[in-house]
Amino acid sequence: MVVDGGSTDNTVQKAKRFANRVYRIPERGISKARNFGAKHARGKVLLFLDADVNPPPRCMERLVEVFKDSRIVGATCKIMPTQARMLEGIFFQFYNGLVRFACKIRPHSRGEFLAVKKDIFLAVNGFDEDLPCLEDHDIAQRLSKVGKFIFVDDVTVYESMRRFRTLGLFKVVGTWFIDYLFYVVRGKPLSITWKPVR
Image (cartoon, rainbow, N blue to C red):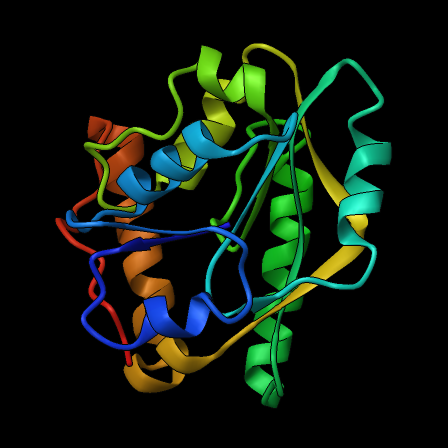
């Protein structure tokens, strides 16, 4: 299933070639689109992926195994760049290590890959639609209060470097850092929108 959050390009037409169900909602917003998709999903486990992410083969089979443990309510995994340049590869290795460690203390997730049990997702009221970004980190935090949120070491997804190469690695990471600090201090990131990069 694909949910399109008000794109103005050919996303919907292209998605219809590959997905059995494609929904289009008029309002932009990461959380709005994901919550809409979750409500219409039929499975017991929800897997949220960004459009520019490539999951590995047998990814869903591995998640089914992970969620056999009744204590586990959510999970993320290793995210690596597609056709990585050296600095990108180094940064992502470091970042994955940081997320792996954080999941043991104060869980964190990126929206590129977030798996969660549907009943638990609905019980915590899904993604916070008032957050323009860091909605993935926010829900990981809330999920960790009702069960285990883990890092799945043997699953790797590959992310397009489109945003990083358009805006610059340091600018993207700097924005993440500032938004995270504001989220910790005041409960909301500094950014008020997450601009699309084409």
